[in-house]
Amino acid sequence: MQDFNLYFDLGWHHILDWKGYDHILFLLALCGVYTLSDWKRVLILVTAFTVGHSITLALSVLNVVHINTALIEFLIPVTIMITALANIFNKKPKPKAIRLKYTLALIFGLIHGMGFSNYLKSLLGKTTNIVVELLAFNLGLEFGQILIVFGVLILSFILIMIVKIKRWDWNFFLSSAIFGISFVMAAERLPAILN
Image (cartoon, rainbow, N blue to C red; front, side):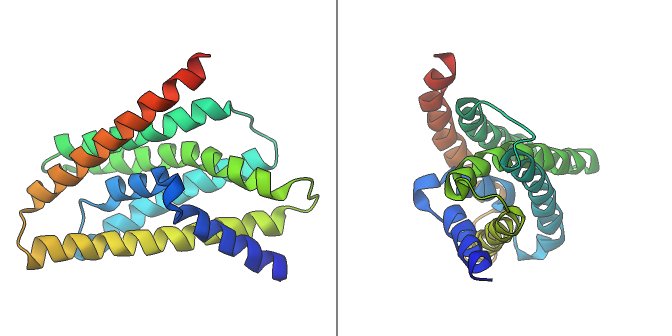
């Protein structure tokens, strides 16, 4: 149980670490355009992302899948850019666009899971029984994600419902800022995959 608690704590501390803010940016882009009243949509989106990153986190840590670390580190900000652009260009979501967003969240979760796995592999070292550690770390990540998503939904609610910022203005501001930050991240990481 001590190992479980240790890896659970490492998981949620990892996702909330400002040094690795790329995952926080993705969650902001994914959920920042919603408010508390949209919790069902957000729950489906985050679940799709969770399913994706849980699969590749497990496959990568168990050495079933091997992907170039530099490529994954480049693709993570690319997923953030695509999500931010989708928010900007999708003013009034239609059912097909919403289903596409769920599908993209799942696919992008696969990429982010491989990013998480690099960190977890470095922690596990030569451990032979990693199932409990993997489960605990993944649950810790989910706990951290829930904290971030809840915070983002409250912020959006306050700005849109109380401060009375137009929903589209908030969406455009947030998504544009996230796009700009992730574009710089991608540009900085591009040379690593070209070498």
